Amino acid sequence: MDTSTTITHDEHRDDEASKLGMWLFIFTELLLFAGLFIVYGVYRYENQEAFHSAGKELSVPIGTINTVILLISSATIAMASSAIRFKNKKLTLRLLVVTLLMALIFMVNKYFEWTGKIEHGYLPGTDTLMNMEQGKVLFYGLYFFMTGLHALHIIVGVILITIVVIRVNKNTLSDENPVLLDNAGLYWHLVDLIWIFLFPLFYLIA
Image (cartoon, rainbow, N blue to C red; front, top):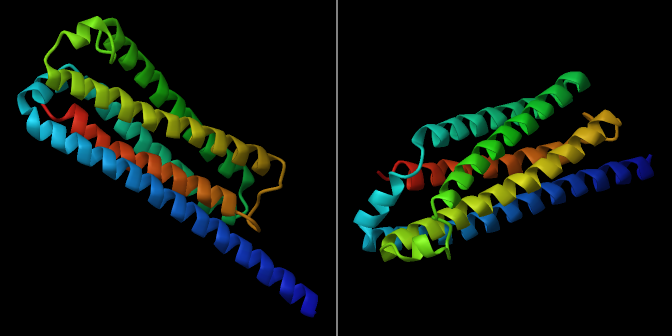
């Protein structure tokens, strides 16, 4: 009886440590992007007309669609966390697959958007961009770096969610130990939150 109590306590402690670790990670990521937002704010203040002009080159419809896509994906992974607690494995898997599908659509949209900008010579370091005014160089430098860093977070999130899908399918992740799914959800909400700030800064500036 004492042994059982100890095991239960240890498992609970590990779950709490895992959640705490994820929250600490999220906090450090928020600090990283907060620093980038401050840099963006300073450069925008110093180059208001150039940032305004460069922002017109971005597609607001694509940015809006990607925003809706990420909001949907956040909802589906949150519902997956609830579904697994109701022991509904099939629904959990479906919701996680929808989340992954939303992430794929986001990245496809972003790929075509980046490709279009690269073809127009807006990639940092290209002769076309370097011949533009300094404000536009800064704008597109920040655009590619910050949205690229966000895309990297999405790729990491996709890998994490894929691992969750595999474990749920193999019954090694269930209502008895849903912490990995919860942490994946927290991470994905972070990805969504970052985009919520990136969207108006770059796409709605004009």
